[in-house]
Structures are given as C-alpha cells and as structure tokens.
Length: 151
Image (cartoon, rainbow, N blue to C red):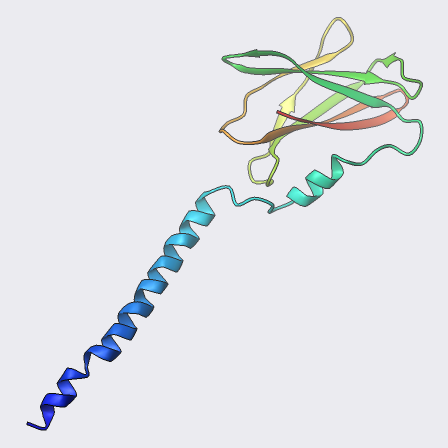
C-alpha cells in the first residue's frame, strides 16, 4: 500500500510537461504565421520610408510621377522630368522598380518607354495585394532625379 500515494502524485509532472508542450507548439505555430505573413518594417523598409522623405537641398532636376490610367491589366505610371529651373526637360533614360513598401523581398524591375509628349510610361501590375511603391530614377541633362510613388 505504500505505492498508492506515489501513483496519485504522478499527474503533477505530466501536467507541467503537457503545459510546456502546448506552449512550445503555440510558439511554433505563431512563428510559422509570422514568417508567411507581411511582418511590417523589415529588410530595408526603414531605408525606403526615410529615403522617400528626403528633399533636395539645391537646384536639381525633379520627377513628377502619377498614375495616368487604371485598368484590368494594371496601372499606367507616367514620369515627367523637370529641370533645375522647373521647366519640363527631356529624360535620356528612365528606370524603375516595383517593391513592397514594408520589405524588399519582392522587388521587380519596371521597363519605362518614352511617349511622344516627352513623358515616359510603364504598365505596372502588383503581383499581390498590399502596399506597393514605384521607385523611379531618371537621367537628364541637369543630372539624375529620383522619386517614389505609393500605389
């Protein structure tokens, strides 16, 4: 009969072990959810957000970015270059990147083509839902200009 009290107290270590196991399982599930979702400010997002707030300090060319059209295929982004004096200028080359606002995992290049009116246009189709931005760099006679447009 001396073994009876020892058997009654065996549930105590099992309860602690089960509780610890449940905590460990919950941690693994939450880690998987965090990795698969958009976690927020990671992988270059602070640099992107801070870089979009930088204002030029002197006379420099500037870019005007706008969404010219929306359709089922995507958005038509239009770029116009303005010289240091504020007048329209012709860009020699325009390049762009489509990227998530929050992280740099899904950046994709954008091909801009010149339009007859002096602007440059590109069809942009974000591959998934979420916050996206278009970063554009244009080379002109007055130098290089960069701008970002949130879609």
